Image (cartoon, rainbow, N blue to C red; front, side):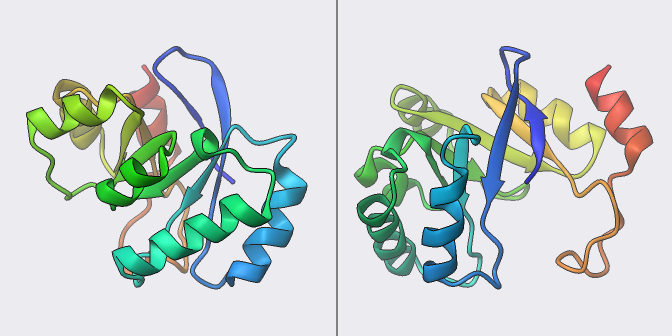
Length: 157
């Protein structure tokens, strides 16, 4: 569960799904976390847009999570259809200026970054927030060097 700084400089707790979690796991675990978390990221790189839409609908139906607390990773159409609170983009994912502005009229749009240079680019691009990571070595990012504490310090400065 990463904590990161949003554009308004307040600390927010975001819960991010793991590829090893089933929908049943999410329903049970996320329900318990609702009082403590500010947002829930539905992040399954291997699932299709349709599968993510179905999962999100079931999560909203079976948990006390509100649509505005749900952040959809990668799939703008799903985020838009659900009235989600956010769209989260990968570091490489392209978005046109027009699409970004249209989405930002409805929700926050953020991006993952893995270097200070990419964080600066994301800020110039107009992202509402960013997630810097992974800070330490991670089994979920084999072969990708960690961002590191020193890089995180430079980014925050």
